[in-house]
Length: 425
Image 1 (tube, rainbow, N blue to C red):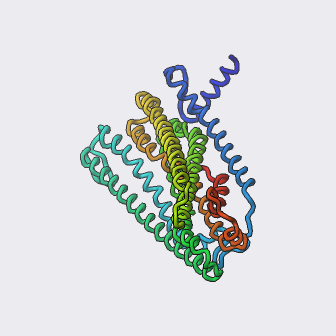
Image 2 (image 1 turned 90 degrees about the vertical axis):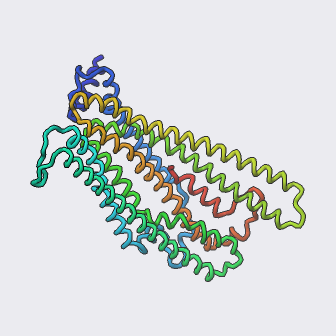
Image 3 (image 1 turned 45 degrees about the vertical axis):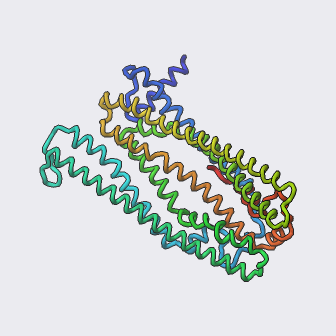
């Protein structure tokens, strides 16, 4: 009992740091929420961050050493994809970073104005009010705030449009340069007997690398800044509600990436099955007479592909339902605990409405940051495989290894092996 009393004193002290006097006057149903927000959530969040750091560290140490393809890259390509991107697009990268940083204050204004509309234009009783030397009645103030909100929305839309156009231009320019270098190396290397492999490399394999080139700096700055801006806004309205917004974050960090990794593994397996099916059909079409077991092999491939897609659908929709449920838990805390704060006079109704509106955009930046980690790992592996295609080891493997009916191609097998230990979501 002595330890329990001391624990309650610690919780009271923590609540006092957030500017909330947590005493006997607080309803009993609110006590579990306060303990969850002030004690359980920080412990789980620290544990989740430690788990991610250890996991990334182990994945970094266990990754395979760089092969000969890195030591002998294509002429004009840097061994590091990030250095290659920054060397050829640093001016446009600087402009995208500037636009990303400019989006943060615009976002904060769009979050703050609904609160001002509710508190100062709808619920306030002292009119007229003086703004910049002008006396405004209630209707005029409402019109001014709504017009300012409309201007902020327009600026936000223009900023996103300009940023996306600039990113698209950057991606296509880098992709054109990469394709030209690869094509020139292919002509110089005399690998004309590998025409069937160079076509998908130039058309499809390097396509995601261009997208990564556009997002290499912009996406973490923009989405990380968006996440930080939303959290800052919530904490400014009420520190306790800001902490409540992080309640389900540890569960999302620990559970959702693991489930998403399983979806990615099944998706890669589906790609292997589709390519294998295409190779089998190509072999059968090259024969004058269809093979006796061709129909049986085709039916087996169709059945395996169906089973894989069913597993992907079940896991994907379970992941979506779980994410939606976890995302809906935080508004439950806002309505219950935040509603009690409004009745108590701790926060205004406009602040609660603004926090609820801000939380709707809270999960999207976190999801984009996880996607960025996956995209960066995939792009680096693809970039290494492009170099490996022209290395002496890649030439030997591609020309001497037989392709059995159930064996995938060498580049795909390497990509899948490397991606399994490096993707998070």
